[in-house]
Image (cartoon, rainbow, N blue to C red; front, side, top):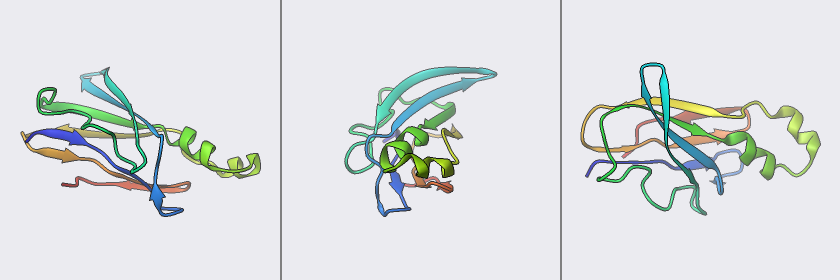
Length: 118
C-alpha cells in the first residue's frame, strides 16, 4: 500500500505523546526540503499517514520530532527543565521499496529508540 506513518509513545509515563510537532524532509545531497509538518493526536499518531499512496516516493528522508516542546509542556515546574536533554530528535532513513514504512518513536526525557514497524 506504500505509505509512511509514525507513532510517538512517552515511555516515561506510559502514554501516547499528544500534540508533538513532527516535520518530514526529503534529503537530496546536502539539501533538505520540507515536505510536511504534522501534529500527533490523542493516540500519539497523526490523523493521516505522513505520506499516503499518492504522495509516496523512494528516496532519503528525515523526520524531526520536536520533543523539547512536548516535554516542556508536559513538565509541571521549571525546576524539571534543568534535566531536559533532547530538543529535536532527527531520524534519517531511506524509503527503498513500495511498502508501508512505520517509523515509531519511543521517548523518555533521557533516551529514545526507533525502529521500522509495520
